Length: 424
Image (tube, rainbow, N blue to C red; front, side, top):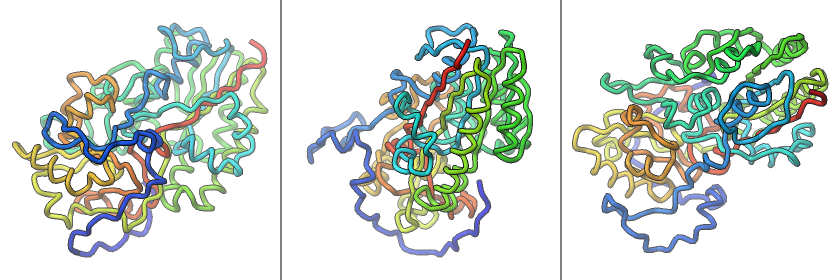
């Protein structure tokens, strides 16, 4: 997270949330025409608007690397997309570059805008947050299968939360996520795999869990990473190069994704990607994708559980992320928590039990060993709202303007742009 000035916290009475903004609702919800009298779900509580679970089967972030690897001749069982063959490939992931957000602000990105015609609008997954998406991207599996299921999730049997981004005091990454990555698969098939990003990524918990394989080259700035990528792609060996850039996400968090600063950063990225594409050898392809989008959430539209005794009752750990809290409840309190949160935040959020979230397909197919990592109650936001817990969340997180993690069209869809090799 980016260091920012924290917002002072003051004790206050619980505030009744504002009416949701219809313009922020998912297109799925807006088109659903849900009647005022909703049917009852298995828990006995009324059903809210339909939950727009990510359409994993139609192709998503988990399908990008398998398709690219297959284009290089790496064995892949029926990739979602068949890409033209290439000697080498470059894959760029721009953190925070949501598809719909890019569409709206495409005036800052003329080169990327030129790719929309042949591009794809794919799903990142749920929760729409970096550690989950990196797990999907790296392993080629949906969240429920790779088991990286939120920004902060319960470590079963240890009564504590794991921050899957920082991995502070976390379990051994290769045990937490033991499935092979596509970088490992490509390297085993004889492809020269290189990954470039900030130096602290090398050997980090998240990298080891989701993106291990090949070698890592640290490069600080975007231009330096482009140069390292071009150098590797121009080598005579068949290669796969991965470039990560995270500053767009940082700018969006601190200034908002609708800010002029976000537009300026997008312009910088667009110029760098155009230069990268122009400098690649003719037998090298280029694929560009992202891990999630973003929503600007006004401070007035946030609930702090630390000052809301009603919402805090029965909740042992507030995990997940502010746009999609996962509530780990005290023994026997799940039903009460579910009812309370449905009554209090159901106006602008989907409030689901773990079983309901899994049955709705939010995480894709969930392996049994991963079920306990998911909150007893899962609360994705439908509107531009958030839930924080200042007893647990760091001050810099509380001060962020741009947030993500939920199921809306501004958060889940990401681009998949593929520029084929000109000669193979």
